[in-house]
Length: 208
Image (tube, one colour):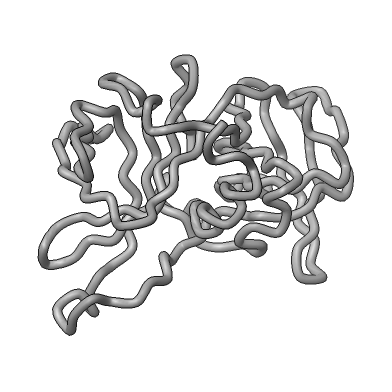
């Protein structure tokens, strides 16, 4: 099978990091800005992926040389165990602490991917925390996890109904019309260029 987990670990190390690091091809491309494209595939031909975004815009995404694809599959909140490496998008709660918007459980081969806590563009004031689960406690209204990164700890509540997914293998054959995607890309003067594509498997919508 193509694109097994070691390849994913190498190819998607920036999928949940704020910035995409690459060497600009020209002075013009030096102004490239990181951007996330969320939507569904309209068409895939050669090195171009046409995506209708959640906002209703249609975007032509150019797939860079050596680009990688990964699958996003359903998981359950009960799958989250101490020692797991997770990516959690969250918002501050009115009563203090953070509340999860979604949880991504990384496969073991991707442990350490983009470790840290960053501002995120899923919703205004949201953040993304990639960290190791220290503990996971069941509560009345869901779960609360304590996650650790770079010597720091953070408690995040995971309300019932919060989307929980994991990364799995995928191939270019999974890039079919209607499939939902989350794309880490760069917006340049010449267009939108992607290095990584995460595609929902079996109807899953990547919640990142």
